[in-house]
Image (tube, rainbow, N blue to C red; front, side, top):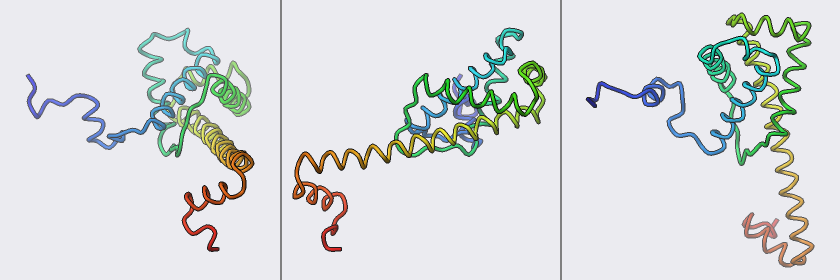
Length: 173
């Protein structure tokens, strides 16, 4: 029976403010990246094998939710597996340094302590933000490189016309 009182989970989550009702493609890509990054981290720390599927799925959801809080991306965000491996390695190295060793890190992750989860999420967030910033710089460089290439290909007049089109009044400055 579908009455107005019966809500589905996504609608309830949106209504509670837990999730943006409309996620952009870039935001979806970011959420997928964070989810895969979290799963890879838990796998690399040998914490998936000793749990039931329900346990590690629930723990992953918790970590992803905490990591996504405050994370935003502008423009295109399209990481690949190589990027995820690189970020995961940095996160794992950072966490091993904080907790002393891979074995101790595995132990504290398996305890599912709220403070440890918050620390892991913060570390994931820090490294993900750094990766997003790095991608934005590369994107910016490509844009200017493309403009330079376009300038040499179409000549100076075409370049100025393009800049005038992009930035009205450019030549009046």
